[in-house]
Image 1 (spheres, rainbow over the protein chains, first blue to last red):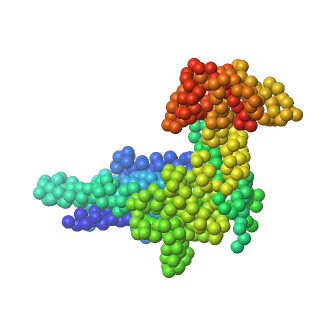
Image 2 (cartoon, one colour):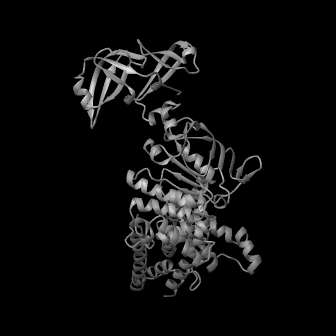
Length: 222
Length: 367
């Protein structure tokens, strides 16, 4: 059960962090007129195609005692970053990045630009327009982003194994836990945990698809 | 408060989809009251409005309302849209779908205390007859109601000027008139400049006191609706103002003393038109309304009209209460006649006919 709780904790942290850093990036990608923005888009989508082990390998190098991230962390906290829970969070944030940014980007891009113009002409600055128009109209996309990055983090294996190792209570997430059970022929235990994970993943995806079908969208369709 | 004039001199290079880039270069002086900016689609009308509202940045401009400068390239002034206090109603209206009608109207009043805001919303809602709708969402109200809400939302902010981008184009005439009357009533006390953009000539007669016609980014004529419609200066404008005959010709003779010149249309069709800035041999375009041409079954005599053309009817086509005749007089003319006239003259395809055309029904237009 400890592994499942650890995974849930990791998923919540990652999806919260991704919302905070994903939103300005998606906003910029949606509204910037810079021609080179496809470069940033490609970087954002990179974790979709890279094998988790490759990503994990680079993450491990960066977090190691000689890596830039690891050195920085060592100076501030007095210990390394690899094989710790914060290290796991950082690697997972990178790994789930596209799952947060894409839904946000799509919903920002779908907002009628004239609504934003109307808001400005009616005296609202950029911030008020963001909070009164853009964010409310993007609510389905924001929920999708949060849920998908949560679910994706829950199911990750390769990256966690590379940068987290397999330390019980600290970095042994549920997917690694299941792997361990299978390795030691504890099929009943593996099955139980797998079923829970399956149930959580299905519920979460049903939520997203239901939302995108506007089955219970917060705003009536136009 | 003195009634302030909206003045805008705007230059901006436009990259219209599907056509070569052209320069928007207009100079507008809009007095308090309703003025109409008229021209075919793609003429640059909406771009001009976007520049005035601050949503687009012109290459060079001086835009001001009274003494207040909104944009000046030389002085490096460019107020943000939210600082200009203009009202702008878009063609799509752009009502916020997630807010109720009441919240939409109150959107521009964020700075007011709650009670005052509520009072303003109530007043403007009653001016534009939408007080019953305040708790509904935009998706649940009719097209005409949406237009009223959009107007109320823009005007509740006490704007310095109102910009309207074809907001009423899709409404029937009666609804349009009633909404415009509400707008006139509202503006009687405030007296702000209202600039109404349209490409539909039907709207000119019903709406405007003052018309500015533009095409290809330039102002082509200005004045009362009749004057602008009757003397279009460009082919595209003539087409949208309902000139069915726009023909290419060559100037054959200038008679400056009489204020006329002779133009040959097609191979052998010579007509007399008002004198223009042309020389013999110049190519000109002549625009003539199909309804300004008379038909006669025999050669008429004793007419003031100077153009009598002999020809043959090529085809007749009935469209509702109108018969469209095509007549070949060496050049092909489209003529509108009534079904009754068609019967009494016994018009039929192939029949010889005379065309009667007043000199001043022929208008010279540029490309």
